[in-house]
Structures are given as C-alpha cells and as structure tokens.
Image (cartoon, rainbow over all chains, first blue to last red; front, side):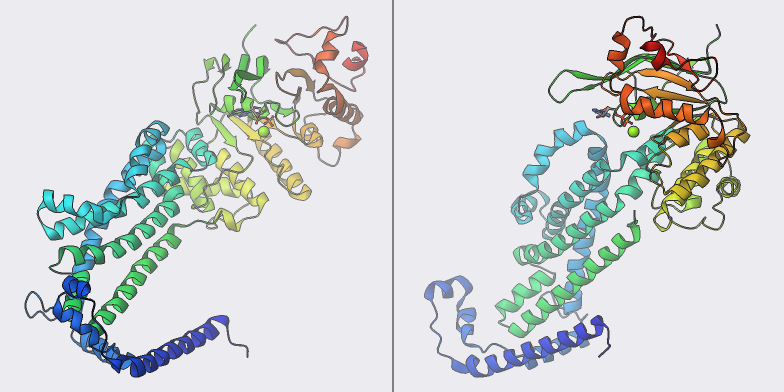
Amino acid sequence: MTRSIGARAFVLSLVILAIFLAAWHVAVGSGGGGGGQVVDPEYAKLVGAAAATGGQTPMPGPIDVGKAIWKHLSDPFYVRGTNDMGIGIQLAYSLVRVLIGFGIAVAVAVPLGFLIGMSPLIYRALDPFIQVMKPISPLAWMPLALYTIKDSSLSSIFVIFICSLWPMLINTAFGVASVRKDWLNVARTLEVGPVRKAFTVILPAAAPTILTGMRISVGIAWLVIVAAEMLVGGTGIGYFVWNQWNNLSLTDIITAILLIGLVGMVLDQILARLTRLVTYPE
Amino acid sequence: MARSYISIEGIARRFPAPEGGRTTIFEDLWFAMERGEFVCVIGHSGCGKTTVLNILAGLDETSEGAVIIDGKAIEGPSLDRAVIFQSHGLLPWRTVLGNVSYAVSSKWRDWPKARVEEHARKAIATVGLTGAEMKKPAQLSGGMKQRVGIARALSIEPKIMLMDEPFSALDALTRGTLQDEVRGICRNTGQTVFMITHDVDEAIYLADKIVLMTNGPDARIAEIVANPLPADRSRNEVHKHPAYYPVRNHIIDFLVARSRSFTEELAQPGRVWNRRAPPIVTPGAPDAAPPLVRAV
Ligand SMILES: Nc1ncnc2c1ncn2[C@@H]1O[C@H](COP(=O)(O)OP(=O)(O)O)[C@@H](O)[C@H]1O
Ligand SMILES: [Mg+2]
C-alpha cells in the first residue's frame, strides 16, 4: 500500500458518497410512501393548497435526481417562454449579475481601500461608517433598491455590489496599511514618486490580502444572489429554485442545489488560483 | 575652518514617552565625517544608532539641529545616499535582477530597459551573484540576500553608504567574506561609509574611525577612536599589529563599563569633555595615554 494520500482520500470520498446515496435510496424507498401526513392549515395558507398537499408527494430518491440532472444537463440552454428556461440559462443570469455587481464593487473598493489604508485620518473618519454598514444583511437593502432603481434585475446587482464591497474594502485598507515599513523606506531612499510607489511597492505587497478579500466577497455574492432572485423573481437560479418549489418539483430543486454548490466552488477556486499567483514567499 | 563633508550639528531626537512627556534619545550631538572616510558606530542596543542613521538617510527627522552634507542641509531621502538595511529590505515579489533594476531605473529614469538591466547585472556581478539573477529573495541564503542589498546600494553609485548592522544576521564565515568585499568595493570607489555594528573586530577591520556611543536615554558620543591600523590591512594580519589589542581592549572596556557610567566619569574632577568636539583617541599609540588613565 504505497499509494499517495491523495489517491487514498479520493477512494474514501467515493466510498462516503456511495454510502450516502445508498442510505438516501433506502430511506426514501421505505419512508416516502407512508403518506397520510397531516397538513397544518396555517402552513397550507402560507404556501398555497397545491404545495401543501404536495407534502404527500414522495421525496425523490437518488435515481430520480440522477435522471433529472441528466435531463437538465443534456439540454441546459433551451428557452420555452419566461417561466420555462434551461437551467444553464438561469445559472448564466445569476452569474452575470454576480460578475457585474462584483466588478463594480472591485472598481470602488480597491481605490477607496487604497485611500483609506494610506491615510490614518481617512481610516479613522470612515471606520464608524464601515463598522455600521458591514453587518447589514445585503437583502435588507432590497426594498430600498427596488424603490429607487425600479428594476428587479438592477436591484439584485446593487445588492451584490453592496455585499461584495465591505470585505474587499476592509482587506484592501488593511493590506495597504500594513505594508512593511522597510519596503516603503526602500522606495523613499530611491526617491520613488507616490504613483510609482503605489504600483510598484504597495500594490504588490498588499495584493495577497486584497485577493483574499475578493475571494470572501465572491463567496458572499454567490450566497446572496440566490436569495435575492428568490425575492425579486423573473430569472436566475434563485428564481428557478423558487419556481420549482411552486411546481413541487423536488428533483429539480435538488439538481439546482447541486449546481449552485458546483458553481460556487468553481468561483472560489478561480479566486484561490489568482491569490496564489500574487502571493510571494518571504 | 571649512566644514566637513558630513556635519552633524547639534541634533536631538525625542519621542513621545508612553507615560506622557517626551523621551530624549539623544540631544546636542555633534560629529563630522570627511569624504571617503569609513566610520563605524558602536554602542549598546537602544542607544539610538539606528535613529542617527535614519536621520542621515533622511528617513527620520531631527527634533533639533541639522545635518549638513556637502554644504546642504538634509531634507528627506536622496539617491546620493544609499541605505543597506539590517533586514536587507528586498522586495520579495521581485527577482534579484528585478530588485537591483528597480533601484537603477529609479536613479536613471529615462534609461531604456536594456540599459537598466545591463547596469544591474554589472552590480550583481560585483557582489559575486552572477547566475542568481532570476532567483527570488526567498530562494537565497541570508548572505546572498545581504549581497543583493549591497548590489542594489552600489548600483545607484551613491556618494554615501549607510549600513545598519549589515552583517549581524550572518554566520562568521559569510560575514568575513562580505566584510572583505565591502571593504574592497568601498576603497575602490572612494565611498564615504557610515556603518553601525555590534562586532568590535568588524569595526577595527573596516573603519578609519570608530564612534563610541554611550547608553541611552540621552546617549552621547563619548569618544572617537582613530584607528591606528594601516589603511592597507589584510584580515589575517590585523591582529598581529601592535595597536590591535590596545584598540580592541579600549572598545570592549567602553562597552562593558564606561558606556554605562559615562556621566559619572565626566563628573570626576579635572575631566574635560566637549559635546561639540568629542575627543579623538588612539589607543596603543606611543604618545597617547588612554583617557581612562588620564581621567582617574
Ligand atoms: N518610533 C519610535 N517611537 C518611540 N520610540 C522609538 C521609536 N524609534 C526608536 N525609539 C526608541 O529610540 C531608542 C533608540 O532606538 P534605535 O535608534 O533603534 O537604537 P539602536 O539602533 O541603537 O539599537 C530606543 O530606546 C527605541 O525604543
Ligand atoms: Mg538599531
């Protein structure tokens, strides 16, 4: 047994997956058909009659979900009307919103964070605002955004912007403020001007911290977009999940959940790669 | 009298004290250096050596007094004064060549890239690092990093080199080699050097003058030791010189006892000491009695 730990971990992952799927299969097969669940009338009012009685539709097993995934992935980009689009299209809507909101946040947070990090005065002056804004759930901005922007898609983008802003702002300011004194002194003794110093010393020195902030931001943005789209509806993977709940299509919901996880992982991995690119060993 | 090349004139540095008020690290400090001189400063940790060096570099400001170099008061850092940092101060995301080129392109801003690199490579070759140009600092040993720092300082062809304990983190063998190289380079290029060190033998081997600083706060320049060793000295011969041990003993004596009790020493009757012109002593010289004897 001289295989690497990576290979052994992979085998173990497969075993865990197999056990999980088997347990799921058995649990659904024996318990799901039990039927006769009592429907709470309050609950029925809340979700509508169809969904409430839907409590009696059996929980799908892994094979049902597998079929659904296959169905979705074999034709992900069809459009058959506003309420019937391929899951790939819905994911693309969400991704585009996240990328636009996140992109605007980068364009604001990095220069502003630079300013805050370089000036102890501005740091202190803006700190109370940042401390208050940071813990606000981004969805709390939604009504205000809908009222002022009057467009559901733009409002989701705004919410993404707001939630991506803080981690990047704070990390950029922190990274810029904690650049080693030695490196700044090198620039000073070489009579390097402020702009050149910003690009040749401060930016590369703070880049790993800034990229870490971006990674946190993109993770939060992807969490928030699903909730935002459930709220405003129309398009996007969040809306898809909500729509399938109204259609009582649990297999579609589980498929969407898996895809949301996968896309989130890919986004995170991209940022992790970029962070590694700019990280320097000391 | 004409002013010296570097003239430290009554400088003071005070920091806000943690318990309120201000601590005086040193005040009314006077010292002069001539062009081409190699000066080492010796004193215990915390006495203010780095502060003096940072003031000379223009990285720190005086609370009082001024430093005049070549007739002009220092106002901030200058490319004429290169600093070799104790912790080498290399930019870790740049290669060896990148670090040196950064300095070269800062000095000659209109040079094309090829010319900058060629000049940088020459400086790297001077410190014996040819072949390591594309390495990052993290891939280098401590001695090699310090060499890059020296190459970077040399590459901008400064008039003055300021070194803060440049070799203190190195093993004895590497330290010896680097001392030889720095001494050779500085003599060949006629550098004026201000260097801080903890190592008495290093000071005796390298310096023309050795400045002895008392313990802080309120540190003073107690004496300046004029090194009696010939300018043409070799590492393996210095300890055979008749003045070597008197000089060494004098400095060690200062570090062990007099640096702490210097104010009491001054209080003794008949002891004369002038802040503006600290005494220049030459231990081991036949005509000069050591000041300790004279003082008692
Ligand atoms: N920025 C600062 N604020 C307050 N005290 C300082 C500061 N920099 C240095 N000091 C104090 O000044 C004294 C001299 O420091 P330094 O010049 O680094 O000493 P040395 O290099 O001789 O070891 C020390 O006691 C140190 O604590
Ligand atoms: Mg020091």
